[in-house]
Length: 474
Image (cartoon, rainbow, N blue to C red; front, side, top):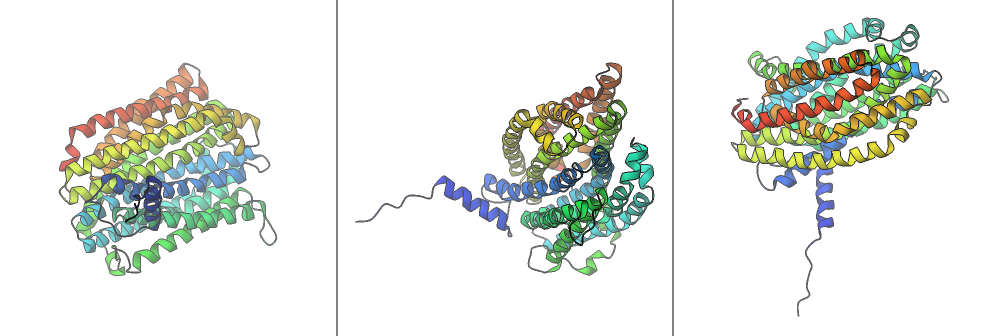
């Protein structure tokens, strides 16, 4: 007599999938279950982006409890606002790397994929020598332009100097992870951020507050800790890029500039850089507008809310990156219908996540704000900002997946145009009118953000349905 053996339960299969996603490996995402492909990529990508957001959150937590914390919080927030331009460069290049590497991997050509990835690194090194030097030299002017008071500049200029000087590390961290994501090995990208954040979490309290042999450097200590942490993460990436054990097998010789290949990469990267620069500059404008109408407390409250917003949003962005890899690889494998189905499946999971995050933000905005500031006025403004901005979370999630799909296909001009219309022809004028003309001040700026993101999500969906992204050659 045979005994009945029950099939593995759903919970068991879920744990098995989670274990596989965290472990990583070499997978062919052009075959098999789309759901499985999305989750194998999305889980490590979400955790990677959680770790990226932790950098700013950790800095904010420790400097938010310093004496005269409003100055320190404003320094961190305003510097991060300017660094979004650097993030735009990093994301634009990493986006190009993901698109080209994914397309070559879909064509089963890992050698050309490695060469394309290394060319993006060469481009990044050349550009950042100029940007990092300029940012370091003009640090105090940058804070002044952003609306910081004289006291904030005095207390925070060294923080800004260090953070602007480390731009090459920031760019490489994003860029090399983009290469691994394009190859479908998101677990390495995730682990590099884990390592970087563990180092930052250990060093930040030691260098900000001081302990034993470590001097208390205040807000400057946060910048040093973050720079060291990110640097360690980049070292981990470089090791795996060159160790020959992954599908991407980099060679030093591939760094030699290849102008035809570099031009092809820049053709994708430049509109991608413009796309994120457009969005970043609009956020910088909003930061300056809030500082103008809300003063030091208004600015610090807004910056606190934005850091919390990014903490929740970056995992959704990580999940949307799964769509970029799947679109790129499936278009390379001549399977546009599978690419489209992958996008819709990713949207479904992102909406579920963002719905959950919306409930947390609505229920606990005051508690979340209180964790990161000991100033009552700052906490009140941060709580209000988080409540208002969270009403558009689900639309943010939809828009992010659509944008990633266009970028993964190499259709970066589509998202560039969408960002220009959504941010500069819609969000910025609306925020200014509500804040200045209607005298709603900081509240007007907060309201403009979810409205504009909803507009971008709806417009990007309509553009996606037209299907022109399927015809882009990379």
